[in-house]
Image (cartoon, rainbow, N blue to C red; front, side, top):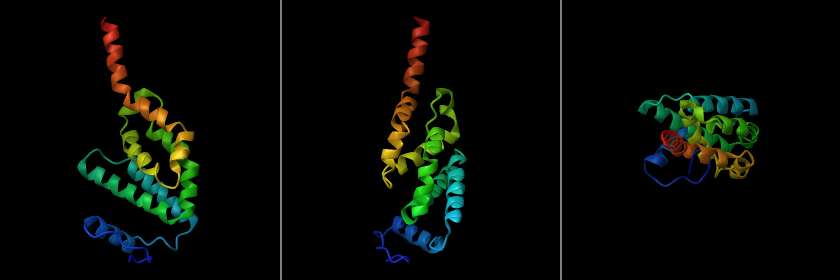
Length: 152
């Protein structure tokens, strides 16, 4: 069992990391304000992560901690519900010119990780995340088609 009394995850490095995070980062006594502050700091860490290997490791760790707070605290879920639309706009920008933005590229995996958590998939549909994601994925093909059309 983990220090919180939850069932321990299967062994291995992932399970060891989870146990270590449980022991090092006990958030049981945190107030709603502290939880929101931590979520803001973690979102900032995800958004501003450098494209280097080290920066992406920090981004992945911050995302993992973000999701951990969502699993443990009702206040975290409520806060993310309030800021999800803005997070979606930053992670999946509607304007094509912003898709090379490193911040958007860092936030997109966080949005993907949120979808299966706490019924956020339905909320992401409400803020048109799927349409935005499709537009982002189709960007290169649309640009190539525009170049070809201009040359013909």
